[in-house]
Length: 167
Length: 167
Image 1 (spheres, rainbow over the protein chains, first blue to last red):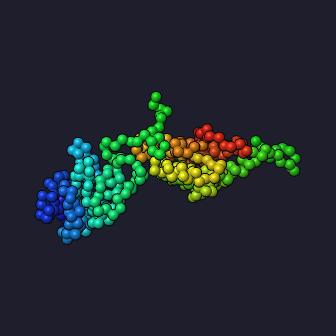
Image 2: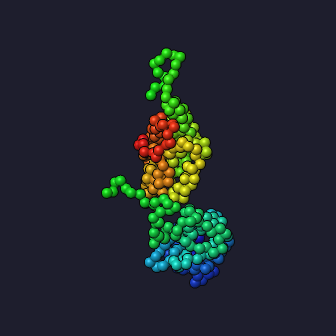
Image 3: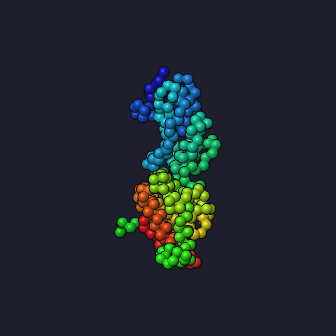
């Protein structure tokens, strides 16, 4: 029996209480915030609870919010057997973003967490192999952070090119 | 230059440079270096319609037996370092064809943090083929230009820096 987002949210509230924030948005965009330290636990519950059965992590991404000093990790979840959706959002502090891994809940999270680590610098505690996945190993910084400054050169390769059109 | 002159059938005269260059340009083996969508056009160029084999060009998957490397696609900074390694493995004399806007100057992705703005920042380029992506006809013309360049070389003189022929 599919649940709407409010139904999923109510079950999460029953189980985890104040660790779950209010529901925002509607339909497939309906989301709620989760306390960072409890995200792995919440995800495990969402996956195993017979009435929820979120067996698919559709997407795991990150957003940088410098103004409120937060890096947000976003989890898009879907249940194939029950056909319902929920979006979870976790705010980590920008200076030292640490979020527990969910790669032992959904193995699909493994590479996606590596991507968020690579591009935004979020450390996922308990991740089995937290290395950069897209950028070179020796790349300085995390390029999707708003305050990232592109290096002038990389291993002697200049990263800008003089334009023949602009004078 | 004419290899077969109008002298009696028994005799052929040619300069040694011309003769050697004629043989060299007739068996240019290219290393496939498909990095992005340009690779699709490169495959088409090697296919039956454009048919590079009629110029004696055969695709090779290793730099060690290749004469020319066709850099086709967006070159990231991570790949740029590997491109240099591959180019260094090619035996002299070796040539580079830069195929498409991305390989020429970074193209559409020039301002991206991860993209190398042109393969000529890493290895010397002989022929630039413009286009996004270039049609097989354009790449064929670029390779014919390369053949013309090979034909004009002085075999006993060490190859100088490429001037950059426009296809």
